[in-house]
Amino acid sequence: MTIDNNHKKLKLTSFQRDTYVYIPGYGYDKLNASYNYGGAKLSIQTIEANFGIKVDRYAVVDFDSFKKIIDTLGGIDMEVNQADARTTITDAPGTVHLNGQEALWYARNRGLTKGEDGNEIGLDGDDWDRTSRQRKLLETLFTSMKSADLGQIVSIVSSVGPLVTTNLKKDEITALVSHALTYLSYNVEQYYVPEEGLWYYDDNTKTWNGTITSTIKISDLEEQRKKFASFVFEELFTGGTSSKETTSASN
Image (tube, rainbow, N blue to C red):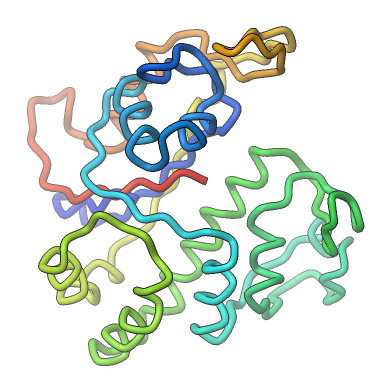
């Protein structure tokens, strides 16, 4: 997530986990492997090395904490489409109230049928659909909090803070909370990497440890770097400057 104070926008970017990238110290592998090898620190180094955007801070939430956060907030009302409705979320298409477990199923599944891989809910689609749902869930969460006052924001942060692993310093968290009502008034824009037209599937990729797997390869990395920078900074190529606070999390 990028907080763009110049243009008064919150910007959400998803990275496809199967993207074939260079992982510092390990060589080429899938992007999500960087977290397995070196946690948030190596994931950030990998994003910076491949895509040219500096990541200031990180926040990590595991599956169990995700469920607890959604439940702490009282659940979340999501707009569920016809494809989503063909699941054990038995409500008709439309606005559906999801608890923490249901929200986790909604956010993390990619084309799993009911009962597959131990999941109770299945969703049509692929990883592109999954990351889209994740961004949609975050945007819905932001929208639901627009009516909150500062006292409620402080209470929410106090409740969910222990469930989040982050390298944000205490004074930075205090500053973010104090400006939360301003940030929540910003428009939300979404992006994903790699962009359409700049990638292709390779079903015979060899990773650094010799495993043969299917990956997403970027056909023009320099162009993708420019597109990503343009989304984040907007005026980058017109000589302007930006003031932002950026947080990135790996899914």
